[in-house]
Image (cartoon, rainbow over all chains, first blue to last red; front, side):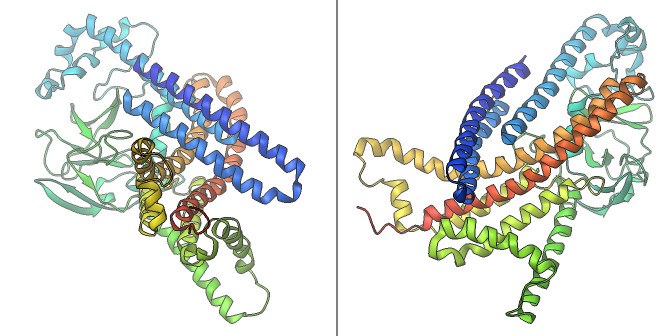
Length: 68
Length: 445
């Protein structure tokens, strides 16, 4: 039973991270289309932002393990 | 989106394995209720070392047939140990560290340095366990109370375990516990101590493993390779000064300049030369190990997917960041200038917590990404055995093998991308943390 609760918790954490990273990716594509010469700057900032959003999701997933 | 997919698969895989374990547990609960009488008869010898809860897991042959068609796995010594295929357990086994180095099916012994409190040190080569050169790394003999179970050393805690080098009949894995068979008796074994508080392992157990394990051996190999590469390059730069780069020099220079121009200079400004060696060491160490972990059949090491390794990398980033923090950095953490006093009381604890959360996320990100990638590959391979029902269903097995190979190829090409992205993300985040710590604030307040 606790296994399924953990799975649901991780699923919810992943939805949040998915929305966040999806938005980052979409906006970065938009920005690259508008200004193709800035592709290098945009790409590294995109990865930086995605990594920060992912960090929150990872902490949530680890918490799921700890709380069970 | 790749990140998202990976986290998604990771959670999927974990939920499958957790769900499967939950199912097994309920099932054994049933067994416990209606065949406890058969237990004493079949395993009288085993009663000497009761572990309370696992009594109910041994049911005799009679009750086994009473279960009908399902393949319930009764752990008894001398019987058929092939139970249900558990993809979760298989995946965890394959990403774990080991005391043998495997190249394909070939198992190579490694030195073992073990310490058990009250018992002292044990230093020997892992071929003392007499495992088969081509096989799964199961030792056929015990040594000083240690056994080699699937490539990893485990210790028998039971005092009744025979001294010296008794012959092992087999290993049993059941309900998250592992047992070793000597004669007709089962002895519970336990894994080495881990510092993760039982999160992905057992926590502190009865022995510590300081061995040159598979991961350590891979790390040494990669470090030697990187030293050869970079020392050679440095020499070439001296010899060929003013000339165009050549060979490995021109190959590595693009990556080196990329990290310098995209990571070090934008975040660290004019102080970048001081931190460039640290950032480069981080990037190439992580990249080298990530790529080495992708090589199929050679070592199969998962060094950057090991929480201990990423923890040390995170601690290094933490030390470098905070040792170089200037007055402004500490002021912004401990007593944020320009904020009202009541806001400061909330802000200060959050900022102090932030110092520790930053390296923690660095550690978890690298670990989770590498582990998730390796697990997805293993699960795709496991699909063959799930649909083939362990060789009973040939159509299912061969049919899935084709699809599974394609999926694995696809996943491994994504993994190649992830190896670069994660090394880059680790470096760029470390650079941004260091950059925030050394930044000068001349322009405002």
